[in-house]
Length: 164
Image (tube, rainbow, N blue to C red; front, side, top):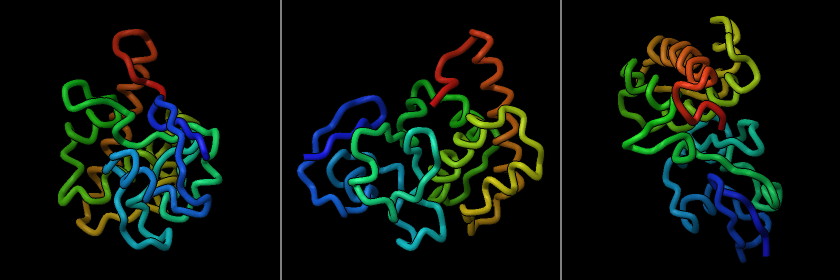
């Protein structure tokens, strides 16, 4: 049995230790935010946070998540109360097809966790492992900057969910 914490809830899993974390999240925990894209760690659609660090869940075996906190896009907020990152992506209309956006938000969340005022170069460098084939990169850049501003406001005590 392997335990992990998914979006703040403890789960005990009986899966094989080498099962990709993505399969556990989607098939056993019902968290469908992370997507199966390439299965090779080349597109980022499956990106989640593992103890605050962005990882490709398609390449991460369950064993590496044992005892750790896994955060998916569902852990950033709800439909009725989106977190700052989700709000920013909505307000900037950063999604076109939307397939990559959950992974984009998680990688951006990891960036803002480490650097609350990233430059354009910082954002481009951090987001490079994630691909958007719809070409909404400029909107995604604006959304990340907006999320940084929203999180600073949240840190000032006017809103919740500033931290992953």
